[in-house]
Every structure is written in C-alpha cells, then in structure tokens.
Length: 389
Ligand code: GMT
Image 1 (cartoon, rainbow, N blue to C red):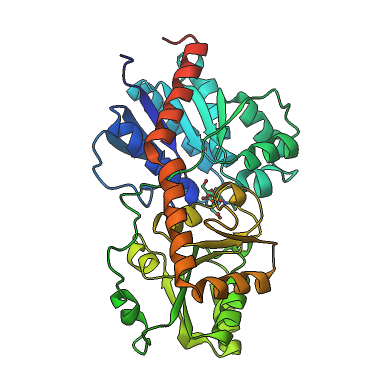
Image 2: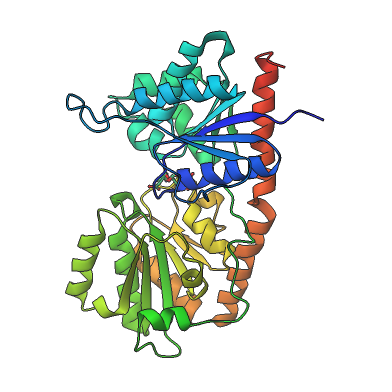
C-alpha cells in the first residue's frame, strides 16, 4: 500500500467557494490517513478546530508601519510555506487560487531547492478571469502556473479559459476535477419545516413561495437580478426571498427593495456558517451570476433538492442540467428566470421532480470520495514524475 502523504494546503480563509473546496479536500485527505497542514492567514471558515489529522499554521504578518496592510502577504506566506515544508517534510503543496498563492509557493520552492515539495495549483475562476488575465498580473500568474507540477480546474470551461486567456499551450495538462458537496451534510428535510421561515417572517402565509440566493454579494453575482426576478415572481404570487451572505452590493439591493416596496418580503441572513435549514425551507435557488467557474452554491442547493435557476455562463452548464435539474437563462434575462420560477412554483410535481433530479445528480457526479481520490492521484502522479519516491 502507498504510504500516507504529508500535504500542505493554502487557501483564502474567508467566506468563498475556493476556501470551502480547499477545506473539504483537506478534511477528505485527512480522513484517508494523510497528514494535512493548512497554511493560511486565519482558520478557514469551514475548518473545524481540532479536526483529526489536520494541523493549522497561521501566516505570521507583523504590523510594520512602512508596509501597507496586505502588501507583504505573498512574502509572509512564502516564508510560512518554507517553514512548514521544512518542519513537516511536506511531500506536496496544494495551493488554491493562483493569485498570490501559486506565486508564493513558487518562491518558497525556489528557496527550498531540491528538497522542495511538489506543487499542485487549483484555479478557481476569478484568479484567471478577472485577476489572472489583467495585464498587470498576467506574466507572473502565467509563470506561476507553468512552475506548478500540476494544475487543476473545477470545470472544463475554466480549463479552456485558462489556456486561452493566459495564452498557454494546450499541451499544458490541466486536470478537471469538479467541485463536490457532502450529501450527508447537505440534504433535503425529511418533513417540510416552515419554522425557520416563521422566525424571519412573522406574517408568513401557508402557501407563500420561497426563493433563495447565497453568495458574497459581489457585482459578479448580480444581486440586482436576484431582486428583479423576485419582484416579477412576487407580482404574480405571494413570495419571500432569502438572501444569504454579505458583500459590497448589499446596500444597493436594500435600496432596490425599498424602491420596489418589497423590503418586508425579503430577509437578509448575513454570512452564515450553516444555512441548511433555510435552503431546506426554500422552493427555488437563484444564481444569476455574470460568471462562475463552477457555482458551488448551486451544487449545495441541488444537494438539498432545490431546482436551480442560473445563467448560461462559465461552468454553470456543467453543474445545472437545463430542463432537468433547473433552467439556464441568458445573462441578464430576468424575465426568463422569473418565467421559469413561476412555472416551477405553479407545478409542485415538476418542482419535486426537478429537485429530485438535482439531488440525484449530486449523488451521482459530485461526491467527496471520488474527487479527493482524484486529487490524491494527481499528487502521486507528480511525485512519481519528480522521482521523489
Ligand atoms: O465566486 C466568488 O466570488 C468566490 C470564488 C472563490 O474564489 O472562492 O468562487 C470561485 O470558486 C468557487 C470554487 O471553485 C466556484 O464555485 C465559483 O464559481 C468561483 N467563482 C467565480 O468563478 C466567479
């Protein structure tokens, strides 16, 4: 049997899909007997303290008057990667999000020399589409990717975008390993339970429809379209909207709701560690993003048995099967999305069939064991190639 590996994982610790995926990969690897070390600014938000087989190493960032906050983060991270690699004789560094993690890892490996761990970089989307392909960063992001022993993306769409936007040769192998969710942690309610909703809306009537959206409320998520779809649905039938998360577009959405006279129909739940009961109480999930490399929030909703109404962009068509587990609409087509929502809400049998198909798809194609086994296979492949064993 192959020996367990010593694996360092770096990710952003704050609310966001890349940190969630990194955390779940680390926990899955530890469950398979590997020795996992998270090296991050703070404890990743979904990483339980004291998880077996997992050690957390915070990146030390002293407060120096001459350095602007953040400016020294890549150097501080590279130093931490060097320390942890040496101290724990890491076999692999697996960094999530290229900017600046792949660059810091490249620097650390350069310093470590022949004893350096192998480097696996997982791209997550905005590191390529927004930041990575901004000409300011492009040469270094491109070089950091080329310096990695293996590169992975959560969708075939992001692999294509990476080759194209960074002008990389298609001979550069990029493994597509889809994101995943634990279907035992994200599941439909055994019995419909409106109690979590009544805690939010004291005047909730029995047959009101509930739409839900989860994101970091950045402009790319198009929160204004979530509100516009909801307004169209509400004009046809009584409905409520659950907005889970927080971010820069929250205030604009609040103003939009006031102008529409819909503030009392909407609950802002803020950033929640656990929001399963609210997804379980919802009927439909909305994700009208301008772009998504994958759309982990949609997958979590699908695991809970919710049909997903999303835009036909990026990697979303690899997650949502149009007409089967939800519907995909052109970007900005809030009329189409509202039409689909009303169609579902008017037909409980359709809603339940699509919700069931959504959960079945998650169980068939997006489960942790298979994905974590694929990451492990990538590690072993690069280690064998680097002739380290
Ligand atoms: O979507 C965000 O703004 C957060 C971002 C992140 O880096 O955490 O999410 C990206 O990675 C997720 C995990 O792979 C994907 O599910 C999201 O689709 C992707 N976001 C974008 O591509 C905009």
